[in-house]
Length: 146
Image (cartoon, rainbow, N blue to C red; front, top):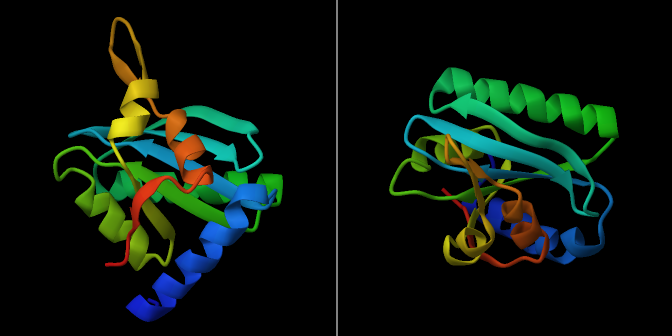
């Protein structure tokens, strides 16, 4: 695991590179209590997977990383950034897990994505599409350094 200083330096570089990159896979995650909803896209705006649902457990986190690696390799992308829209404290286990796996994790402000977040009836499932857009524009509350 990288040191806090190394992670901070990496995120500063990432903020500079991500806007014009065609080498970044952005995973937007809408956090919930029991299951999370992920959207996979590129910084260039290409949609790779509209919705991937996984449980809020270690097994679910491993499924997320497996799917992420599959899409990253398939699309020949170099860098993965996870954008998390936190809900209460439910995001903490996932964020901690991803950081321990040396992944780039950013926390997205809930204010902007929620205005854009679409809700679908009848299940009222979150659609995390706006999170990657916010990450791409670097409109994040902070870069997670745990």
